[in-house]
Length: 192
Image (cartoon, rainbow, N blue to C red; front, side):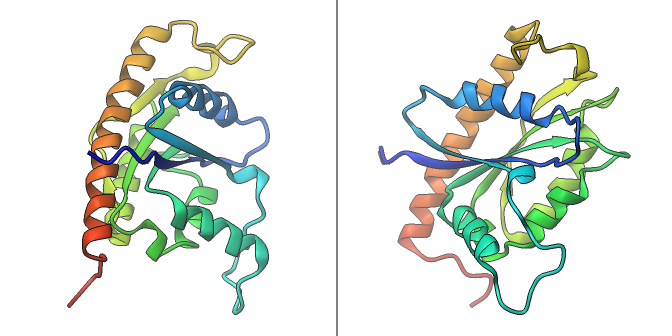
C-alpha cells in the first residue's frame, strides 16, 4: 500500500463579494486536517489572479496556478449554485488547465438554496470527464446554508455534514491512490 500522502487541492469556486464559500471551504479544510493521508493545497479563486482570456504566453500567475493543479493527486471543489449552475469563476479556473486534470478524482462540496448545490454539481459532472477526470458519486451538500453556520464558521448541526465529508474523503482516498498508482505505472494518454 502506498503511504505517500495524497496531494489534495481544495478549490474554493466562488469569487463574489459577500460569498459563503470561504466559510464552507475552511470548514471542509478542517475536516481534512489531521488526516495523515492528505497533504492539502487550499486554492481560493478570490485570492489568485487568473486571466479572463488565455494569453498567448503564460504569465507567472497562470503558470503558478496550473503548477498547483499539476501537483495535485485529487481535487475537491467548493461550489455554490448560482442560477441553477456553478459560477463563471470556477469554469474559467477549470478551463485554464487541461492535462493537469487528467486521470485524477474530483469531489464536490456544494451549497445553495432548495437544491443544495446539486444542480451545479450535475453540470460539473458533465464537464470534468471531458478533461479525463473522474468525479465521485457522493458529495457534501448544504441546503439553504446561510443560517447553518455560527459566527466561528462551524455548522450548527455538524453530525450529518461531517459524516458526508468522511464518506467522500474515504472515496477520494481510494480513487486518488488507485489513479496515482496507474499514472505512475503507465502514463495516461487520451489516445494511442
